[in-house]
Image 1 (cartoon, rainbow, N blue to C red):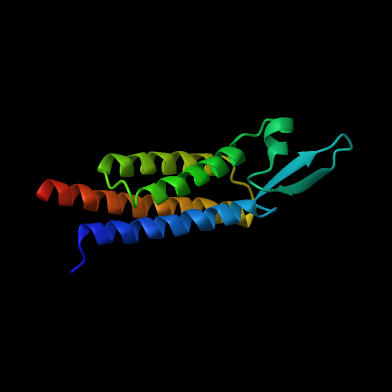
Image 2 (image 1 turned 180 degrees about the horizontal axis):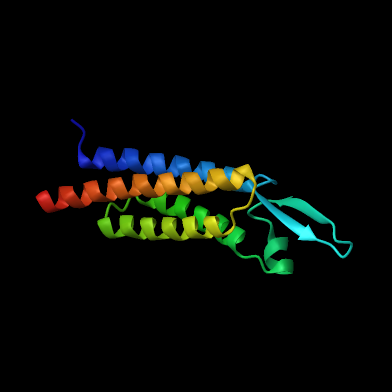
Length: 142
């Protein structure tokens, strides 16, 4: 039978792998699709990466960059959970994950990568909730 320490380690490795996959998907150049309207009346869809600073600096579109930064923070926090096994730290990860999910939903467009990013963040949130509830239940029963 696995101990709680082993289960939290497995949980954190799963969450780290999902965070790494999120960052790889967000680095792809066609994660966000924005439709620009030009003076001629022509509407042209242009694809961007989540990490593209031109959206943030030139056009004021903040949600994709917020999603990308919060995904990097999630990867760091999921790596730190291997060292810090506190239920408060799990709750911090859940809050950051929820904020990243909200930012990803705000930047959701017709791009397939954006939908995959939203689904992965939702699955990561559910896995984190299950893991956090397990740890809290274990500590209360101890």
